[in-house]
Length: 238
Image 1 (tube, one colour):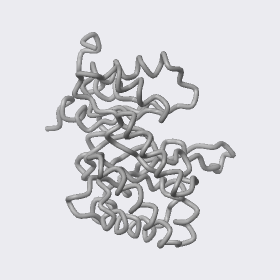
Image 2 (cartoon, rainbow, N blue to C red):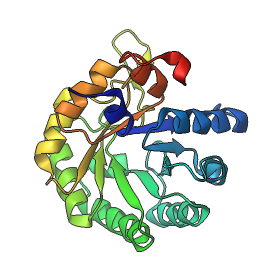
Image 3 (cartoon, helix red, strand yellow):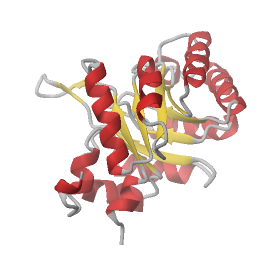
Image 4 (tube, helix red, strand yellow):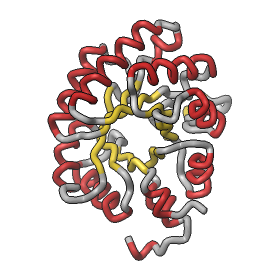
């Protein structure tokens, strides 16, 4: 049976909302340490702050590259990666160039992946590649991305940023984020060397456990406390 502790060790606690202040980022890092999650994923400028707050904690520091739409040139993504690693990040969640994926410019995507992965691996850091499945909706594109990620040496494939807003039939803008279909497809499309990260809309323990059963080895969420406490843990212990 999946335990709260096991789920906590899959969670990358997301602290990425554009309105978050330094005070809120600091409090989020402190919460992540108390919850015992695997890592925090912070806004790039906040890497030094997260490193400071989490010094001595087993909770790792990660950040995002090319976030949220993946549109930066490859050279800028490489520079972002180098800066973040020098500042103390040990995990990088990079958004692919979504437009290039949709037009099937696989050479561009391959070169981008190779460049960022090479920078990260030289420093012993992990790379998680974000597909943004609310925009990249065709299964054949997701399979191709898995293939390219595997070939580049990327450590994880990841569904979403949580900011892939699409106009809904109601006229509102929203996103679906991780789905069971996509987690199963991505797990099947990669070898066991490559992890799968479910991210976007992961909000409760049952959903987190279901994604784990389908093969997710990381979970990206800002609802870490609700997920763990919803499994029956005493909220006062946090």
